[in-house]
Amino acid sequence: MAKPFRFLPWLLCTAGLLGGVPTFAQGLTLPQAVEATLAVNPRLSGFQFRYQALEGARATAALGPQRQVALQLDDVAGSGEMRGVDSAELSLSLSSVIEPAGLRNARLATVDSQRQQLVLEQQQEALALLSDVTRQFIRTTAAWDRWQLQREAQHLSREIQRQVEQRVQSGAAPEADSLRARAAVTRQTLITDQAEQQFREERLLLGSFWQENNPVFEAPKARLIEQPLLPSLSELLARVEQHPAWQRAREEERVQLAQQRELERRAGLSWQWQAGVKHLRATDDTALTMGMSVPLGSRQRATGALTEARARQSLLAQQRDYTRYQASVEIRRRYDAWQQQWHSIDRLQRELLPVLQQTLTATRSAFERGRYGYQELQAIQQELLQARLLQVEVAEAAHLAGVDLEWLTGLAVLPETSSSESAVRLP
Image (tube, rainbow, N blue to C red):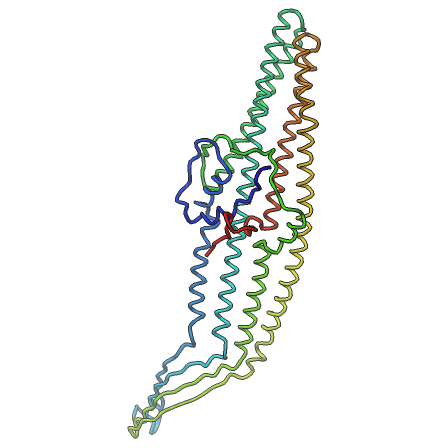
């Protein structure tokens, strides 16, 4: 049994050590493809700016109430005794707000919840990116295998053509067999060229993950027919809540709750105080000024916003539960498909392919002895080719289903062990 596609922990822990895109002189492995992707893909690089923005928001949230300095001139440029500035009063005051208890901590809690939400979003994006790379690596490997099978079929069709022409020249076969063999070679050449072009397209798509316009690797170093290991269905279902998408939904609830508590704190009384000094020009006297003000109806004015926040909290909880249900259904469906596909591959390897291979060997031997004609040999050759292509197709679908299961359960992000597969370390 081959090891499962548990690629994320090692890759994410080494992401900060990557300095450039590696070259692939002798084929490409999955870890190399992911390493190259993490080095340059822009889907993860933008998070650093979002972290910087949250740091600025936290610094702002930590500030206390702003103080204000006011300069006021009264009783000037009037009429009668108030003409000119002889009766002027000049006031210099300092004012600020006394925030409700706990409001500053509530603001900080909101920003901290948003930061934790961003961490989970980054983990989710990383898992999505690397799952996409793995899927494309599987498709590229399958395209390579199909191309190689078509090349083998092309080589075999040319050998058969030479044998048919020898039999036609000796009078052991009709001229029509030679024409059929020549047409078969031409047709197989066209099919092989199409398979090669398909591989080049898949290779280009794979290289686009690390922004390589002309990938230079030849063959992916992987075997699709090797079955990866996956936990049981019950273990997979138990890990749904450990997926970053699920945890992010939980964190959205915490952010909403923190914002609700901040609103509740803001609904409290915010006292505004003022203190200063006043100079009366008419008597050349100086006096202190003091004052307090309290906004009326603050709690009533916040009722609507609090009702909205509580409704959003309930909606998020409902959406989270429904998301969990949908994920569980999808896990069951993918797991059943994964099991069925590997069962089909096993039957192909044990029951169908050996029989067809033996049949081709026997038919070719009989053809060389003149007991079978060209059409019988061509038919069994195509039947074996189609069976081998079917094996590649089913193996590709099985591996893609396995990647989907890891994506749904977050196995690659939260491994069960903490040795070689250490936990993800993100900002």
